[in-house]
Length: 42
Length: 216
Image (cartoon, rainbow over all chains, first blue to last red; front, side, top):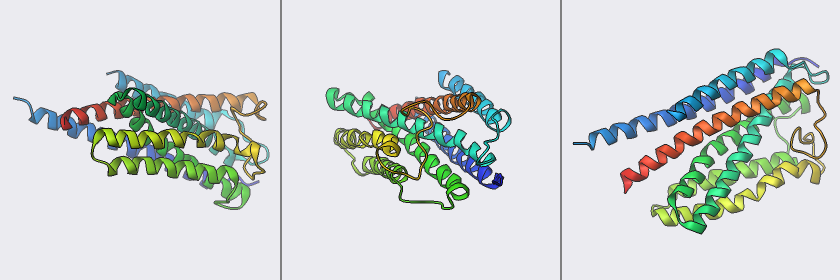
């Protein structure tokens, strides 16, 4: 059976994009909340 | 600080898992290198099971105690759970095309996994639709508990019904029909995904806690 590397790299690439996007979303949310908390201070 | 250390540990484990999946694991005799998708596909679904199990625990905990910490746990596990289920479906579909000749078929395993995905997408949508915190947490907890009933259905679907999908590679009846090295690489990737999930969970719980303190 042919190796079908294109399918392998597509699967891993897609997973990497999704996981990185979620990591960035969490990091962005945490940063914006930290900024909001800072502005609420004295 | 602990979350950051967990994050780095997850990154190191993912790099090791990736290296092992592509460099160490042997080429599968029948499928060729496309079988290496297994080291992504199986850990993804096992991590999703763990996530939805925590949604169940958090949901039961909230209904019994009404403490917001349980609801935070359920919410924070549900998001990455949906993510890992999505990766499972996508990687399975990509793996299915060269091996089965189709991207999708209404096989028991695939259908039940799609239902699992939709139930928890619904769980997250429901949370966005209710404003009052206690009502939101109660409604979500009911879905979180009922949704967990689908986890054994997904896992044992290949045993209970005639399916195109191969039998469970891990956590199934009997030992997995694969060489020891493949099992080791699979376990390493499972560990890496679990660490990544633990990192996401820790960060998400912290964000939910801060959001609640700002709202209150």
